[in-house]
Length: 391
Ligand SMILES: Cc1ncc(COP(=O)(O)O)c(C=O)c1O
Image (cartoon, rainbow, N blue to C red; front, side):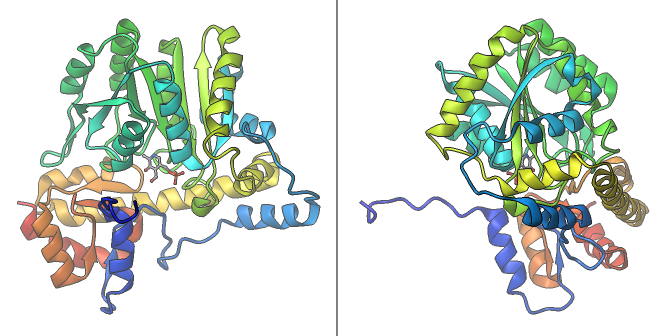
């Protein structure tokens, strides 16, 4: 049976890590995989995380099973960050998951649980959205989101596509820091989307993977709030990978909100049983770190300050790159007002490959760049390589 297996195509983004690692040129620049990097090109462990790990090492007494739902204290504390002070008023339940991907997969399985269902995703989006939703048995439909040539969001086309969606369809929305475009919906856009969705009975699935990387931890949840207030039911998939730098610890959560709170125990039960037959229960370590940080005023302040430093580094590089490119390609000024780690350049796949071969600058064929992979002193060289291809 192994012999007959059709090998799936390799994940292009993960393959890029190896290609960059094996390139001997010391001028190489990695704008590929989506991890934050500091000025030294390191994905360092946050200080609050290190301190929390010390405390856990000192005090942890058992590695006993934690159950499919995970740690309620972690879920409560994380909900306060993601959903804000309002969260007590909304009826919400949560389950700890293996990262944001685990949360999205569990959400998708819940949505597919009682028969066929359609989920709408924007184009472009994080490629794994399509993979996860299709693998769970959902029908995936797309709506326009972004035009890389003009660097603008296609809001009207998006609204018109969603106006044709059927009641009970699900709409995947990036809570902030859109991957791969960085293009942020204005509050009036969020309101317009919420109006269409509430009017047509569409269910939001909010993907919150970069809170704190955009405009700030509070600002980055404003769109999500608008949707939660407008729509009677919603799912929120949270990743702690980026905001806490816990990538490999696989830390996240899925929350369900409903304005009729008495249905929520059923939702929790369904999610727990779907988790049980899949990975059984989530990994504990990352969630313990997050709980330890968020439960302690000093650690939370340290985490928040470091996250803010990371955000401001991204903003600084965005401004420098936008400045360098827009002198000759005015549309690229938009890079400064985009948010989070990514921007999407209007480059053809063969141009990306030729830039990789000739200049050792690594990005996926889509033209997505990880702004955090850049240092300020590399911006000029990158701009001079890119400008001839951006006209
Ligand atoms: C938009 C988006 N959602 C979810 C995730 C999932 O993150 P993880 O599974 O690493 O927590 C990512 C990771 O890159 C992402 O970009």
